[in-house]
Image 1 (cartoon, helix red, strand yellow):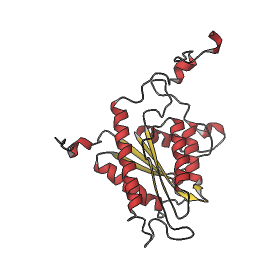
Image 2 (cartoon, helix red, strand yellow):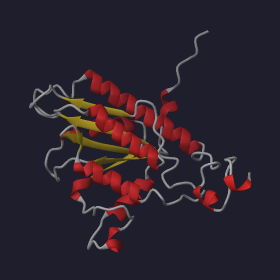
Image 3 (cartoon, one colour):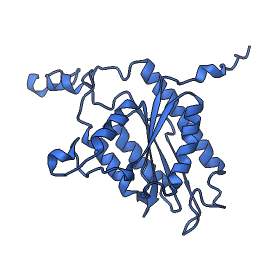
Length: 243
């Protein structure tokens, strides 16, 4: 017998929330081509009950640095602490941004730097703070570099403690050389099947994995607790002092 397909209600994610951080260089209300790709992913999530929110990082005064609040280290202002609260409230984080000179935008790099500034903080289980959350990325541009940029973002997120599902990136680039960007008339971006497929797969994989982690109450807290390591527990690792 062939199993009946799951009902539509089997794929509801009403208990999940997602934050998209748009790392365009353009302040609001300028048109962001990256936003066009964010909108596609966010629409799928919202259709499945995920609560979504978006931040355009360039609209905020994020001081450079690797401490949670850079006003404690010489800067007059720093809006990162407030944005960090939004990051921690989200089960899913999607970093989205453009390609410049074959690499991530300066804004993308600053956001990742500020995520890193809080990576030493711990959750109630004694794990690093970002454990139990999933991450993905969206890349746009009219020059080569989608996979390079995605590789950098996804490596950074997993290094900080995020869990990365399969195929957690998607992007669009035009033809080599100067040309139209994603939302420009005639670009073919919004209709591109490759980009639409990858964006859809990424979005669903983020939702599936975030739901699995949330319902399992995160990553098991054994063998990965910084608090326990600092207290002397070695989780079966050899201790050179006791050979």
